[in-house]
Length: 431
Image (cartoon, rainbow, N blue to C red; front, side, top):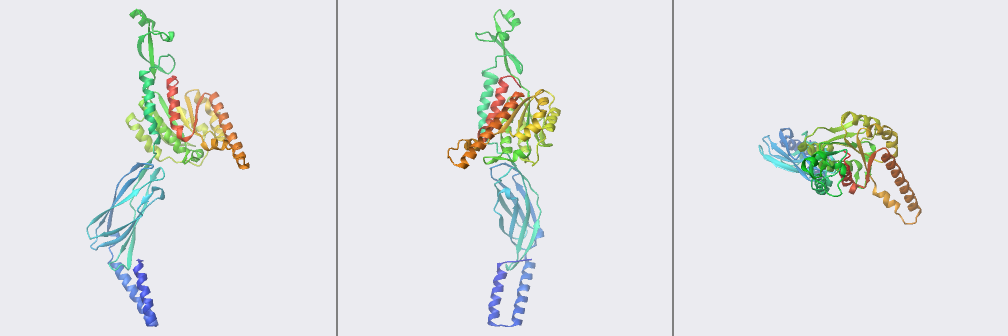
């Protein structure tokens, strides 16, 4: 049983009576009266256990969007329900309002709406529903709880989709209007056409030339049905924030843009999230199901506060991908994880696959390097920034000497830079 503000008001009136009639018997009588009124009022309140609660509404949304979840409350008792209901959610769900006032006659139903504005990816879950049913006098109330499971999966926002039309236009030029007219690894035969000055003589089809009595050359187009394996590092380094977002969120946004582009190009795209063990994977998805599956799996990814295992990562990639593929590794350009984990095992990966390492650069480093304040703190900032830039440049050079393509770009240009690198590799016939 819970007491309301009216009970406190009655107690205050009782104090005034005691001042007028000061006696122990007066105090005892007033206390007994207050207890009896409170107990009777609570007993007359509608029982919380007789409520039937049903949820409906949104089960998924993108980060930054607003969705609604409905709660239907049916009063199955024979008493009128006057209550305050609190539908509690985890704080990151951004639920409002926090409480609802109810006045439901016996046998009737009311629909309550909670608006969610999630602030994090992943599954946003409700905690419990607490109902405080007040008696007809409003002095006391019954209180009870209901467990009603629900889940709203908050997916990555995919803000880089704005870059997709431009990349698709470049892909159409690469695949169609501006056909690739070069022979070599990574290209497929497209058609024959008449030789024009400037064509590579190695592209001449001598048999077709003999048949047509004119010099003709073969044209080539980028290969289709190539395999891309997107490997997202979910170790401790992915939890570091660059600007306003964690590195992991920048990885996922770039992976979604690359996935959408590569699937339009006719390539197969798989996903592997890994730190010391596989966290999630998408394999063999059809083109129509690929992006929804990717988004759904990415929604539940969170950084793990462990060091990445580079050797096991390479072993896992080699087991999952037998044919030659483009392996896009989303990770950081930090010295310790790379030199102690990935670099020693990199040779076995680059010998069988084309490897692209994509890392998010911190624009704050460039700002620190450009400090011209002349203060002692500014001098330290400049020295630290130069050291960080030199180390990243050294690691980039080491990786490129070992046959790894490297993309090192700030968050705002990271996703398009990764897709541009994919298009460049495709145009060069290196997939």
